[in-house]
Image (tube, rainbow, N blue to C red):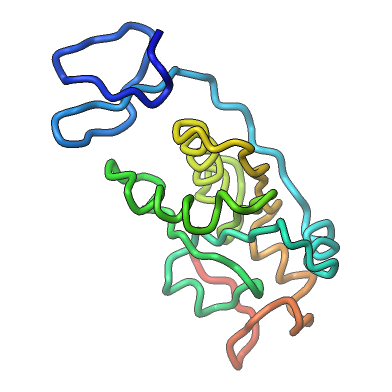
Length: 174
């Protein structure tokens, strides 16, 4: 049996595993597992955790640096969506080892976080990468229901929780 992160020469073919990434003539194989939906957290529940200053909470914003100018949740950590999609997992692995693996719960968000959008897609990719790297205990990964747009609709007036530009929160087209 092969461990989840065993690297094999390109000439080896293993049935029941899928290709995960390329690296210097090797392929990392992982067991194929059906992706389960990522649980959601609503804005009010997140605010309770932020107000309680939960030290195990990490708010992971997957929007682009340009989008961050429209407003952020204080204390966020930014890993833009393309990092989750690229074949080179180095940047994502660094983010995981530097910050993400130390959290007990990671709340991922983008602008709207509808099914199939950047937030849920990045959350799923993060959860899979945590498994491949063998991070235990892995932080619980959840998606902010409605994204930062829904959060700001309710809580933009909380300057202790959000950072906004002079004009306030304005939804950016995506």
